[in-house]
Amino acid sequence: MAQPLPEPKVHPVKPLQGCHTAVVTPFTADGRAVEVSTLKKQIAVQADAGVAGIVPCGTTGESPTLSEAEHRLVVETAVAEAKPRGLLVTAGAGSNSTSHAVHLHKMIQSLGVDAALHVSPYYNKPSQEGLYRHFMTIADSAPLPIMLYNIPGRCGVAILPETIERLSKHPNIVAVKEAT
Image (tube, rainbow, N blue to C red; front, side, top):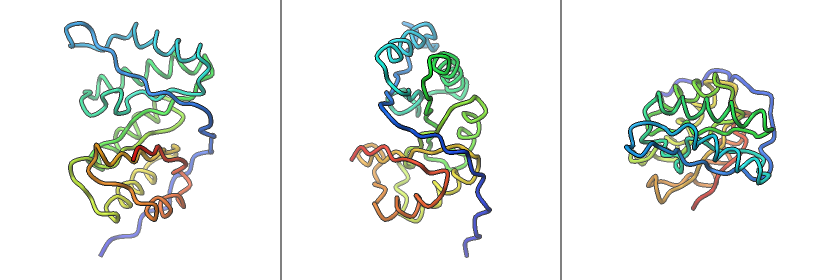
């Protein structure tokens, strides 16, 4: 029998309003390192265009293929460049491993992001109850707003409306990026 989840750690809600653009993770010509200067330029272009926020380390930012050091570097750079420009930062922290997603969630929170983007566990194809438990475990782990990312074409499973409704009752789950 499943154990009840502990009381959630709750964040002060910040609205995720306006346009938030996905940021690619640029690499050096040899593909061995993140090209930080280009990342900074991308963020400046987005700020100048008037977006409300940026989304580093999402699937557009190659999150499943980044090492933890690269992930940290991209998020640190994004926060340092975006925050002084008044942009919100919603960083990707998703993984097909719940424990790794929790680890990334706590890491990006410590780096000063405004919210986390969590994709459904890819490859595993969890049941709706499995999705619910995955996202609830993450939401309970740290007081950081979460945007669920429903992209069944890439993950092999959709977060169904009734599961989203159940998840929406958690105070840390505040938005859905829908890509069905």
